[in-house]
Image (cartoon, rainbow, N blue to C red; front, side, top):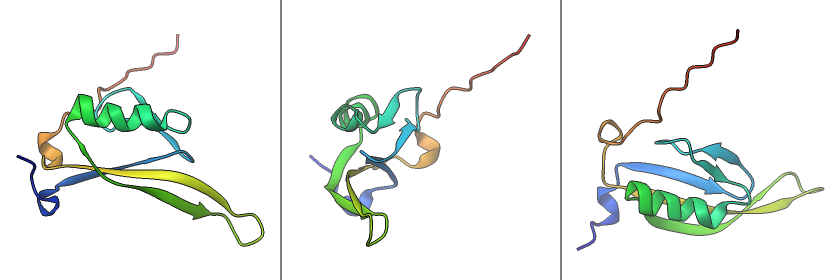
Length: 91
């Protein structure tokens, strides 16, 4: 059975206008990987889709629209896996 939305503890935002990394692993999120990013959070980290819609950004002279998704989980932040640490050495 699905938990009520009021039990949501942690939320992530995916956008066609912003590229970022997954909060829990090294997967690229957003931009042209919008649907793949949503599926990633659902299938790999147990999130559920809370909202999909459009967002208008920019000013009135040059507005542009992006598609956004909000996903949530009932796990608290301290219960979620964290992104692996990456060590870069120059040498």
